[in-house]
Amino acid sequence: MFEEFSSGYYLGRLYVEPTDGDHAAMRREQHERINEQLYASGEGIERLDNPLVMKVDSHHLAVRGEDDLPEGTLALPESVLDDTRIRNPPQLKEVLLAKADRAAQLLEYQQQHPGVGT
Image (cartoon, rainbow, N blue to C red):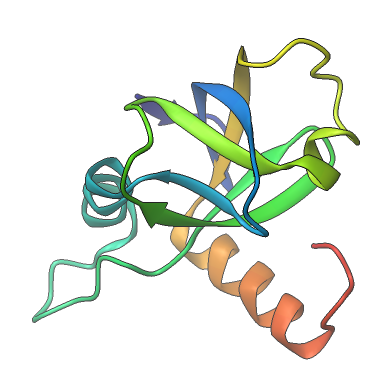
């Protein structure tokens, strides 16, 4: 689903659609699988519910796992979706997935600067 893109990101394609929620989300099983494959170190017991950090257009988003979403779908809040180049969702879109170290940097920045987009 995601392939090597650069030193900081993987590249993938997901259907992007709107959600009434206030955060980005994808199917829980897929979220956990990606966490295990790309973020886990393989040492000891690790959490698989940590947010994935994805970039859609100019927005970095902490993506959580949720039930009741189709496989291969990224659900974005309306406010974020309105600020992208997606005009007729659901739309198949290339998205970047931050590698583990880059994701940690972006999440830390977001915690230190609440309200500022990453």
